[in-house]
Length: 489
Image 1 (cartoon, rainbow, N blue to C red):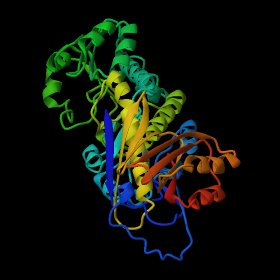
Image 2 (cartoon, rainbow, N blue to C red):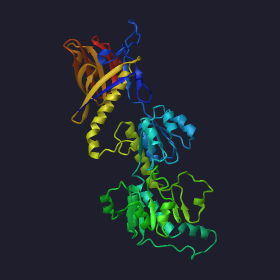
Image 3 (cartoon, helix red, strand yellow):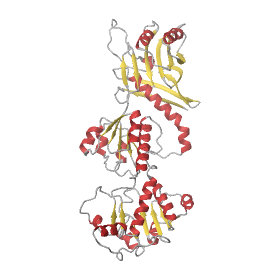
Image 4 (cartoon, one colour):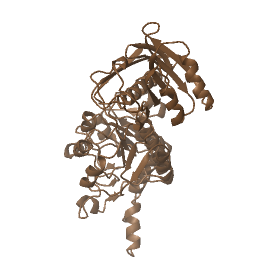
């Protein structure tokens, strides 16, 4: 399987590349570059280009993130931790950032993506829900959205069970009563959970863990989720049922669905009317326990929150020390991986690909990314518009460059490369090798591509260490070398 890349009129930017030095003469049509002119006079001294992709991307962390996650980000990126930004401040900052990490309190709207002017590549949601991110706008602007769906699963499930038991035994109300100087034992008589039916609405990661724990409390658990696998449910001892059956059979209802157009107000007057008399809901019913709100924080005078039969917590599902640490690391790894061009297993606006297929595709994704980096760096060496064409192939699981312009080469795309356009003549490999050897620069490979003997050729030299400016100048002064670039991949 081969891959090729063609870029036109690309310019270097601080987010993707860095031009350190300039080299004499433009890259010509021999490298697939057309209509180029740097306006150099013949009496000007030779210069050379050294290009790298080492400039770190910038990540804006807009909400508090665990220290371990921030430290991981700092190893690979520039990190700007700016909290409590207004919508206007976020739109202003985002144009300087390659990635954004938020929790549930920051709205990543269409305006944010438009303000990024195409620079924003990744949005990381430190948690599961992505209700606060405009996925359609992200996709339209070519921005990947990733989340951290596993690290806080247990914490959210535990909080769900805590709310369930607190609701069944009137814990919050009784606590408030005692603190008010009252002793009302008869008023706060609760119900036992053993033998009761719990309907889990949404049988994903959190819903499944709630079901496991409810089974441990002696409850009969049923679930509704049109996307859940029956085998998975059976393995836990849960029966998948229809929405109406779940509503009609349940003594308690636990809601674990993302907020979408289809799920908005899914518990309404009609569904309440179908519930078993005396049924209680963890989310939206008389005798309710709420942890997530459409608007956060809710209004201070909210009748729902102020109702004595409602237990309300400020979105604490993931608020354990262990979960916060795990989420921070998980989202940091996902964002850094996405910025590196790695396949994102937690992407929410990209097609879901089986793990086996991801493994097979991984070297080709790396090849495309390496070819893109190479092409960008080559184009970065020119001042006028032009076109670079590079092609590659995966060989033994390793990306290889196979063609630059019209020249056939065989170059492993690892480490750093010196790419020379030269006159094909005896001794060229030896001359360049001797210069590098004198500086103790280890050469990993050399490959020469030519059109015909003693005509123009391309020589690619892989090096393990970065040559000094003086050594690169000496290579550029070899009479047969017409032009060259030093590339860091």
